[in-house]
Amino acid sequence: MIDLCLLGTGGTMPLPGRALTSLLFRYSGRCFLVDCGEGTQVQIRKSNISLHDIDVIMITHFHADHINGLPGLLLSMAKCDRTEPVTIIAPMGAEHIIECLCVTAPSMPFSIKIIEIIEDHKQFKFGDLIIDAQLANHSVTCYAYSFTLTRSGKFNPEAASALGVDIRLWKTLQKGESVTSNGRVITSDMVMGAPRKGIKLTYCTDTRPTEMLAKLAAHSDLLICEGMYADEEKYDMAVEKRHMMFFEAVKLAQKAYVHELWLTHFSPSLAKPQEYKNYLANMFQNSLIPSDMEFKTLRFTDQ
Amino acid sequence: MIDLCLLGTGGTMPLPGRALTSLLFRYSGRCFLVDCGEGTQVQIRKSNISLHDIDVIMITHFHADHINGLPGLLLSMAKCDRTEPVTIIAPMGAEHIIECLCVTAPSMPFSIKIIEIIEDHKQFKFGDLIIDAQLANHSVTCYAYSFTLTRSGKFNPEAASALGVDIRLWKTLQKGESVTSNGRVITSDMVMGAPRKGIKLTYCTDTRPTEMLAKLAAHSDLLICEGMYADEEKYDMAVEKRHMMFFEAVKLAQKAYVHELWLTHFSPSLAKPQEYKNYLANMFQNSLIPSDMEFKTLRFTDQ
Image 1 (tube, one colour):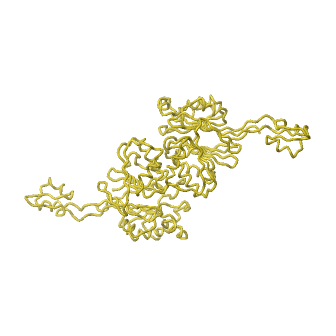
Image 2 (image 1 turned 60 degrees about the vertical axis):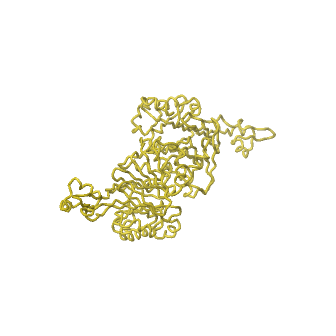
Image 3 (image 1 turned 120 degrees about the vertical axis):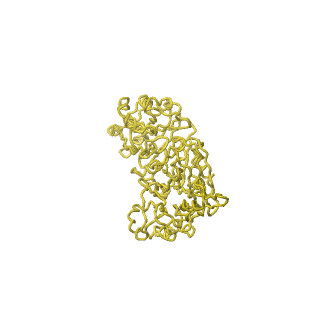
């Protein structure tokens, strides 16, 4: 399962009562953060995850509202006695940008491994978690990220017994490996059912909608997607600034057959996003206009 | 008069419910900000002063909790359509530090005039307001600032009439200039009373107490001073980290004969500074342990 918290829902600048958009989630003891604008560290403190425990930080792009909180976060992690390495995944140029921003945070008690994405699409693995970064379409290089947990099929003990496999070898088969039993090679697929549905989470901001983003988000249990403007009169501005309208986020979600849609990264001009709740629900029923600090647990559905 | 707001009261890192220490004040239509940590722009939005209107920003020193919010503030001022120049006063090295921090804010619609202080003491004038910067004693170069409004004496119309000065020349005398009346030079002091008490505000953090700081703060109507630690067992840590204890801020205030003392820049380890209210009041009666967004108006006392 993945425990997640959408720390903030704002775009452009932090406001009283609306922190900048950032996603924090935990899987299998590891903590992941996507984007870190001014004030993100304060929002993390409101969650049940310690600053100390953040292992991987992904940055979508280098606009201030997505990265300016990074030096402060790293400093505060240091004050929380973090000594384990931290991985930062970000677009090309990250080394330089982070070095500049950290001018007031010259040394850290932990190493920072910066991975710059140079491809349009790049995959990372952290244990069982697969992270896909996909180039978006914003005014600067920007990536959307999906997080996938695959899940193997159910083990069939009757089949293993029928094949005469010693019970001590079952664990090996369950891991997907082969064993030799009575001189015969038994492969994992002979005793495991079809792969079960995993968990998929996609985070997509700031960008125009694209075919590749629909592909990235395909069949997500939850798509957290920017909805910069709700009022359709702002369409031209959305196009000009390479952002998305509410209705465009919905179209993307529909195209990607996602199960649930959360909108975020609201423009400061959108004073009360909640007023568009019905407007959104009429387009996409399983949707939410979240407030800051929106928690959710994504679980494997087929137990 | 000076309208001021202590925007935050925290030191080291921003916390939920405790923003970083920063002072905003307005005098004669001009707005001044002292220090700008992460989240300061959000606190400004809670005041009655627009981001658009900030004219002068003073930075005490280049630790993250005092300057990391600057690029975000400048960007948000730009979004508020600021076009008038902004002055930044800061220690030596400011040009480089600000350039680095603003890597994600490459261009602004207003010019930024950076004044680097290289002397131990430096005086600036903005209209009637005198700003004194005094080198403090911290782990990095740090300045405390005082803000003084002087006030001339009362004009004596009877004296001016007795001297035969034409009523149309009175304004010139009131401005402190001389006039010639009936072939005789009349100087301002001949018709003006003794200078009246002005207004003085001093902001002092992060530093050990020093004689020069007592001199800077002398006879302030309000001294806003760091009180990093309250518990006297933390004295060694205060010395080591070049910060001040509550009781040291009190001694400084006493030495400077200030009228009122506010403490600020509380350590994150000081969870409930208000619990030391009586402890502080027993040492200095006219004192306050403020919360974030503490407002006050300093007025001329002798009308």
